[in-house]
Image 1 (cartoon, protein in one colour):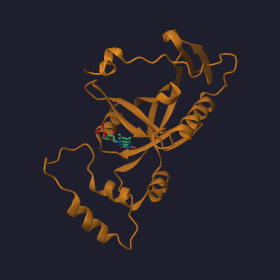
Image 2 (tube, rainbow, N blue to C red):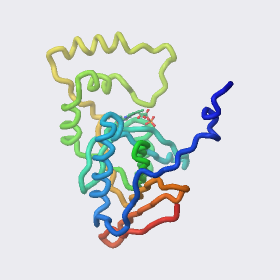
Image 3 (cartoon, rainbow, N blue to C red):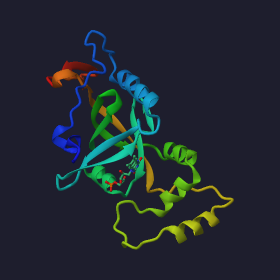
Length: 216
Ligand SMILES: Cc1cc2nc3c(=O)[nH]c(=O)nc-3n(C[C@H](O)[C@H](O)[C@H](O)COP(=O)(O)O)c2cc1C
């Protein structure tokens, strides 16, 4: 007999792990975001910094993919990628992006809207130089988002590059670097029983963060 729980219509979670205290909200959404991220890292230190980044193309078509958060301070949230990738071409055209973090073990979601801006080449160098050599070489080899033959094999190229860089540092290619997202909106979502979830929003208006609550 098939397992009835495998039917997606039967998968149900009654969220009840935590709640948002609307009497105890930090002024800065960055502070709350850091608290939630730290909590998520304690539970899952391999995936907590993964988020879905959505961009919009010049034809107004949205697209989403997972990337990793690599920096966070009051100026914004930083990630790294190939500046020729599809996401970067979208950002060149329209730098409004959406970020979505989902931490299922905590029943928490954070949505962030903001503008993505390239960080300085010095900052990108600093992060690139801290990466393991294999990741650095991968960045040299991959023309991210371009079509390649189905039978394309990177092994020979990689072996050649490894030999070339045996005693040599890998220089960051100019087409690889970081973006900082400057948020204008944060929404903190906490799952609650009976689908009456908590939603706390921060919008940046007139040089300060305006706090509001949304119906679930
Ligand atoms: C867990 C995970 C982490 C990823 N981290 C990154 C990242 O930090 N930067 C990146 O460019 N791609 C990352 N990727 C790959 C992207 O999801 C995507 O395939 C790639 O960036 C190309 O996207 P694009 O063609 O829309 O530009 C990651 C994928 C996964 C599943």
